[in-house]
Length: 284
Image 1 (cartoon, rainbow, N blue to C red):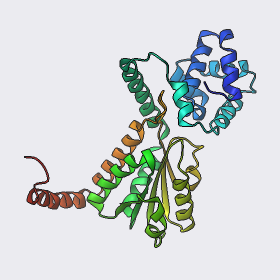
Image 2: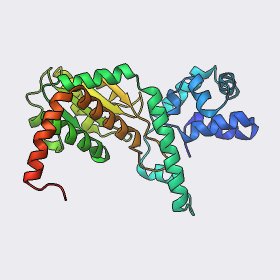
Image 3: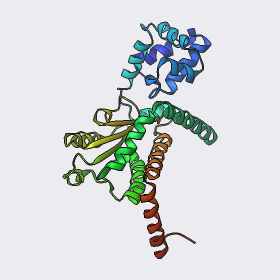
Image 4: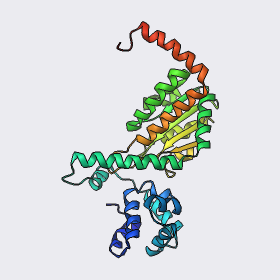
C-alpha cells in the first residue's frame, strides 16, 4: 500500500467517510500518479461527485483546502518505488487472467480519456510543426520506452528521411556532437525515469536544440528540459506502465505530420511501393 502520510491519513479515516468520500479516496489511491494533477472540478467529474464534495473531502482529511491536499499528493510522487514494491502492492494471490484482462483494459480506457483531457490541442499542433520544420530529429528513449521511440522513428524516417533514434547510451555524445538549434530532440520517459534520458535532454538544451518530452506527469524530471510537453497517463494496477496512451499520442503525431506534408509523403510512399515490390518485401 502507498506509504506516504497523505495516503496513510486517507486509509486510516476510510471507515468514517461517507459513500461519496470513499469514492474519492478509492480514486486517489487507484490513480496515485495522475489524480494529484487534476483540478477539483475534474476530479469530481471523474469520480462522479460534486466539486463541493471534493473540497469538503480535503477539509475532512484536515487539510486547509483542496490545493493543500493536492500539494501533498504531488509531493508523495517524489517517493521512488522499486519494481518489486509496485508488484507487491498491485498483486493479490489468486488473481485470475480474466480479472487482469478486464482490469487492465478498463484502466487503459481511463488513461486514454485522461490523456485526451490534459493535452492542449494548440501544444500538439506546435509539436507537429516542430517536427515538420526540424532539420534533423533525434529520438531518445531507453528501456521499455524504447518501444515507443522505435515506432515513432520508423515512420518519421520513412516519410521525412531525417529521423534517428539514439539506441546506444554509450555513443550519445558522438550522435549529438553536431546538434544545432535547427534540430529537434524528442525524449520519452516514464516512472521510473532513466538518468541517461534526463542527462541527454539537459545537454541538448544547452546546445539550444528544440525539445519535446512525452512523459507521464508534471513532476517528471524530463519536464524542465522540454520546450513542449505532452503528458500521457500510464497508470494501471501493475508493476509495468501502460503505453496505450503514449502510443496513441505517437500515432496521432505521425498521422498529423503526414497529413500536413501530404504531397511530399504521397510521392515518397509511391516510390517506396515500387522498391518494396522489387525486393518482395510483403507477402502476396
